[in-house]
Structure formats: structure tokens, C-alpha cells
Amino acid sequence: MKTATIRARTEPGLKADAERVFRKLGISSSEAINLFYSQVRLRKGLPFPVEIPNAVTRQTFLKTDRGEDLHDYRVSTTSSRRWAPDAGIPNHWAL
Image (cartoon, rainbow, N blue to C red):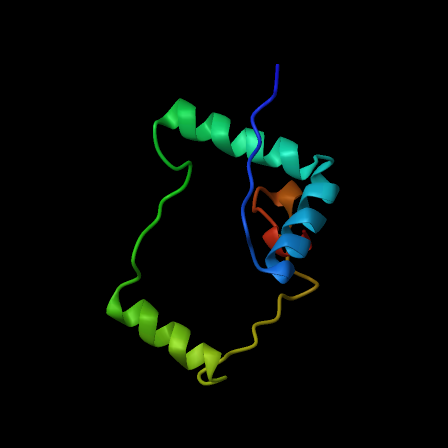
């Protein structure tokens, strides 16, 4: 029986973006939180790596935040390999 309550504050934009993803997955925020808690219990830790970026990565983040050193890569429409889930490559941007 589910009786415990969780209250947390978060940024409105983050909440809206996450809930949009949950809707596409067909789950509620409560279900997503329960999935997260279940994975934490199962793995006895966070279900994803949490790391401090190295100096090169931090510099890259700063540059892209300033709009520097950005590149636009286009995928050929005649390519035999498509960037899509059916090609075995996760398409995270489609969410």
C-alpha cells in the first residue's frame, strides 16, 4: 500500500520538460519517481553515473554556452545507416 508522500522543489521548466517526457512514455510523475526509487534500491546507489567533468569538458561547456566553436553536422539523406532507434542508435532528441 502506497502511503508515503514525497515533497520536493524544482525549477518549473525542468518539471515541465520531465513531465512531457513522462507523458510520451505513458507514465505519471509518481510512477517515474517510484521507478527511480526502485532502481536506487535495486542498485544500492544512483541508477546512473554522477561525475564531475574534467577540465577539457568544463572548457567545452563554457565555450558552447558562449556560442563558440559550434559545428553543424548534417546526415546525408542517401546514407545507408540512419540515426534512429530502428538502426540500433538511441534517438534521445526525439523525446
